[in-house]
Length: 434
Image (tube, rainbow, N blue to C red; front, side):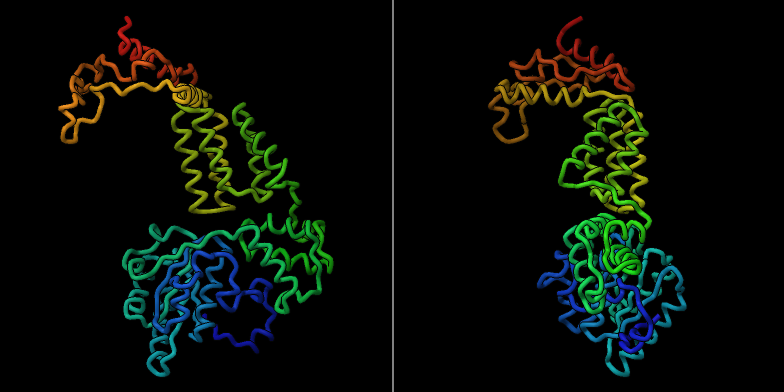
C-alpha cells in the first residue's frame, strides 16, 4: 500500500516500461499544459509546504497517478497509495493514522493517493473527511467518472477539482520517442520505424500508459520495431487510415452516406474502422449530431436526442466504452425515417436573407417593454395567441417582403407525416386561406 521511492527495491524488481518512464518532475510531464503552468494549483502544491486536497478527473492514461507521484517525489512527502477497488474503511483509517503519527513525530507530510476513488461507497468516502478537513494528509483522488455524480459533496467541496484531457497525438509521439532513447526505457537498444510509431499512436487513443505497454510488448519481439512487429505483439492489424488525408474524408463520407441510405451494417463498419484507426471520437459524435438534424430532422425528433447523448457520453466516458454509445446513435440514425426538410428550410431562409429579402419587423411584434416603446407604437395591436381558441390567431408575423415565402416543407416520412397535415392547416389559417 505504501511507496517510499526506494530505488534499490525498484532495481531489484523489474518494472513495466510505463512505470519506469513515469515523469519525476512536473516539467517532464507531457500533456495537461492547462494544469502545469505557473500559478496553477498543481504548481502551488509542489512549491508550497501547505497540504492541499485534489481530485484528478480524466480518461485512463492521462497522467493521474503520475501527477500524484510527482507531487510526492518533488516535495519529499511520503507517498501512500490505496486502490478503491480492494481497500476498505479499515485500510483508509490505518493510512490516515500512520500519516498523523508521521506528521506529529517528524513533521513529514503524506500524500494519500486513492486510485479509482469513485468506487468508494459513502462510508469509505466519509472516512477520508477528517484527514482532508484537518489537513493531516495531502489527499489526491483519481477518477475516470464524473465526480459530481460519484463523490460525496462534503469531500468534493473541500477539494480542488482538476480535469485532465486525453493526450494529443504529438504528446503520445513524444512519450514513445523518449521511451526508446531514455536510459530508464529501452535505452536505444531498439529502433522504432516511423510507420510503427504512427501505428502505436493510433492504438494509444490518447492513453500514454497503453502506448508504452504496446511498445514494450513489441520491443520483446524484435530490436527493429516495424508495423508488422507491432501487429504481432498487440494482435491488432494496422488500419490504413490517415486522419489528415484522403482516407479520413473518404471513410467519413461513406459513413454518412450509409446512414443516409439506412444501411446500419455498412455504417457500423465505417464506425469501427474509424475507431480502430484512432479517429477522434468527438469528431464522429459531432457528425452524428449534425446528421440527426440534417438527414432525419422532424421525421424522428428522438434521433437528435440520441446523438447529443452519445456526444456527451464520449466526453464523460471516453473510448473504448464510448464506442458502444456511438454505435447506439449510429444504428438509431441509420434506421430512423429520413427527412432533409429542416436543412432545406434554413437553407432557403438564409438564401433570402443573403439576397436582401429582409424587411421591417411588424410593429405589433416589436419589443414594447422599454420606456418610450409605446409612444413609438411598438406592440400596439398584438394579439396574444393563448387568448384564442386552439392557441391560434390570424395576424402578420413575417415581414411584408417574405410573407408569402414557404420555407419548411415537411415530408410524409415518419413523425413528420403528422406535421405535414398540421403545418398545412396552420399555414393556411394564418395566411387567410380556406
